[in-house]
Image (cartoon, rainbow, N blue to C red; front, side, top):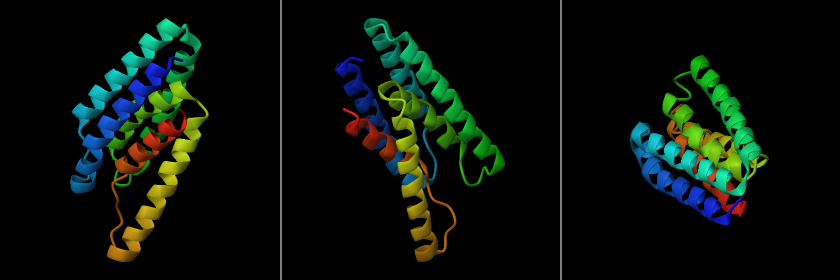
Length: 152
């Protein structure tokens, strides 16, 4: 993998985070347009780097991990749409692809970070304000950003 591709992936996730985190915190909604653009950007970076670096198998493995991860999130959304929105499911696509392409093993660390910070946030909001729902997008985004930056 080319270091320029890693920096480009971090840049895309950073911009996505800057757009989505304030929006999700304020409205409990995510911009599908921003997520779609980020998905296209990440896919192009991965495709170009895989072609240049002859990393076709890494790209295929990354896509397989994306399908599995999105499948789990889609199932969780089906079971409890009030707990996990469709925007979160869509957000997992570019984030998983970026992380999996850099390091497949890091996808599990990302999920651990996002789930742990999300659980802590939910517990605090429940105790402090009595609310049952939190925006999960910021936890996915910040966790992904942290994992990508520490992967360099």
